[in-house]
Structure formats: C-alpha cells, structure tokens
Length: 313
Image (cartoon, rainbow, N blue to C red; front, side, top):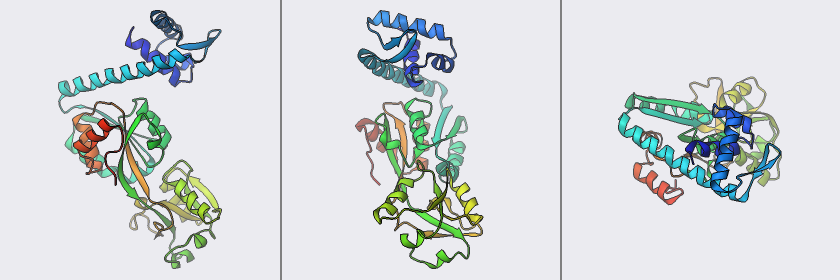
C-alpha cells in the first residue's frame, strides 16, 4: 500500500468519480491511476468503487471505510510534513488563507500587514471565494485557514472559531428621503428597491428572515458578491444598499450615507475554520491571534482537542 494510491482514491471521490479529472489534478495519466487503484483493491481484497464497464459509478460500502481511513492517513502524513518543515525551516514556511471579499477587503488588510512584518520569511497566499468554496478548500487541505460568516459551521470536518459579531447597515445617496427615518423600520425600507448580497454571502439569510417574520417580500432589485459593487449601484441611484457595517467608511464612501440596521436584522458571526486534527505551526497561531486577539494558542488548542467551539462571543 502506497500513500500515492490513497491520494488517487481520495481525489477520484473528490472529482465526482471522474478518473480523467483526478489524473489531471494529480499530474499523472488515467491508465496509471486506474492501474494503481486495481493494485490497491487486490491488496485489500475489496472493491473500493462500483463499476459499469470501465467507468466508476459509485463507492462500495467497504470503499467508504477505505476512503475514510485514507483521508485520515493522508491528513496525518501532511501533519508530519508540516511539523518537520517547521522545525527544519525555523521562521520560514507558507500560509494559505481563504476569505470572502468582505473579510479580505475590510477586515484583513491591517492583519496581513502586521503578520508579514512579523514573519517576513513566511509566504502568505490569499484566495477569495464563496463561503461554501472556502469551507471545501479547508476540508480538502488546499487552504490552512478559512474566514467567512456563512456555511463554515455546517461542515463536520472543520473546527470553527468565532471571530467577531457584526451587523448590517443601510446605505443611500446623500439627501435620500430615507435618511430622515431614524430609527429605520422594515416597513419604510420595504418601500424602496434594494441592492444587497447574493443569497450565499455575508448574512443575507438574516435579511431574508427579517422580512419573512413581518410578512413582507423585499424588492430586491440587484444582488452582488461584494459591498463595493453594491455601493457603486447605490451611487447610481438604482436602490438602497444593505451591506455589512464594517464595509462602510464615511470618508472613503463620499456621496453616500449610512443608517444603522442592527435592530432590524439579526447579528452575524464571522468564523475562522481549521481542518480537524491538522497540525498548527507557530505562525498559524500568530495569524489567528492577530486577527482575533481572544483566539490565544490555549483557546485554539482547546477547540482542536474538544472538536468544537471552545470560545463563545
């Protein structure tokens, strides 16, 4: 049995049982992958995948057990490499982050600046994506730390840690009549076309629920993946914007004004996600504590050992 064989079967499952796509991801040939899987099945004495001709059509019952063990073995092998690299490389290494646009644009810049100053030999990479993309990247080991508001706590393969709570605000062009309605009500807000986040992003589910509770259907004129796009269309007079409060800056967003909407919509919790049983390096802990000072090494270790959130905001 070889680690490479385990990588093959895990990647095939990840690619929806498509051997060609798995081989492409692994930079090898389809016949080579198929041969190694057959050798592994012969060694184990069980079929891992169901077949129809030469195509894989499903995972057998013993195959599910094999895949679960394979993922665990590969995770531990990666932990060994990370641990040895940390001790051999000292302060050098690679940290891969994934965050939504709102977090990457508004919450992380100062943290990234301070981290790079503290760890100049660590190569920092950042990817942006939807919450579900971020969660899957962390699960697959492509990303070390994921940061988002939605979805992360729905993946049992992840440990999630609460970072901070935040609320929404409503933005409008300066002089707009709605700015006279303080405190703002859902009835007044529902009179206007609205521009807000796509359904999978940045607390959108809480916006929907608020209107549902009072029996209203909001007039969603446009949706976008990030606050900058929303602000652009609000500036053009196409509607009122509902965005994360941290995404509005009166000096930077000249021509726009904001109204607090914390009393209209439930608060949101940004979370940080780690893969279960992953080995954390010194600079992983440093980044987390820079981003959220309450996430000390002790708190993070307690969560990793306990299998859940050890800290509540």
